[in-house]
Length: 322
Image (tube, rainbow, N blue to C red; front, side, top):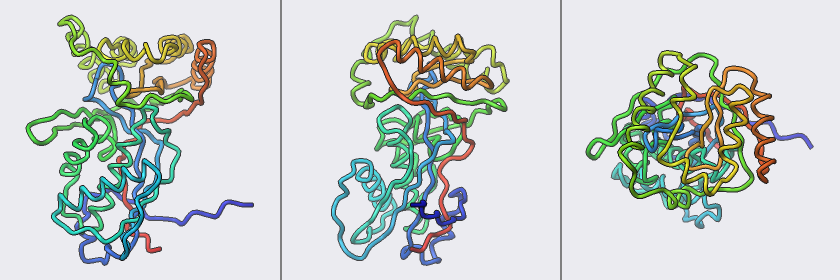
């Protein structure tokens, strides 16, 4: 049986959601396309995140009758984010909100699936409200729900983002990336939920380790913005979180080593894991094979996804009447 052809939707960046206020948006389904994200990039713990050209589509649809709570955990998360947007906007939510997630972003693998879901829920509900909240408003809400903003900022705004908390809000800046950069992902078959992988992190670090990471995070931003690909290996070295998380994922260093030997510019644990990301401009197949071989040698199976950074964050449709 052939797959049913997908309905074509006109997508745009959600910069002017207020135009929906008088368009009857409250009676239609809103579709949001949102990217996966890869956080930390080695030394940038909780402050660096990059959108990837690997997306999911989330729909948020108001109903006139109450609905059962979704059984799917991710859809419950999207629904909670949508209600948070209504609350922040000072609007009464509809009696029921139907949410749906469609996409191939791996769950609990360090690719920002929770941030993607929450970003989409926030954007969808904000559109249904007529767009009273800015993207920066949504970043604050989303970061509060997530507990950190490193995935939420690129999910909403796209690109590679430096994001830091400043009082009650967040400052963020996009970092230019060199042309032709690709990301080879080894996605293991085992999960590393963020909460669990954070529990193994040290509560204190030495001054030497802190300086090590500060220096390399700064070097990473400089190297990427100036196209100094030769510096990426040194610039992605980390002492704050990867060594501890390597105790859970014992083949992590070997997989990174395999990527380097096959020609990768850099390799790091994506977010809290378990995905390993390798940066390259060529030889993607060789790098993918080397990562898979190293994983198998360590007793781990998984799959490869070859993607690239995405300059776009979440994109909302003009309206999708169902």
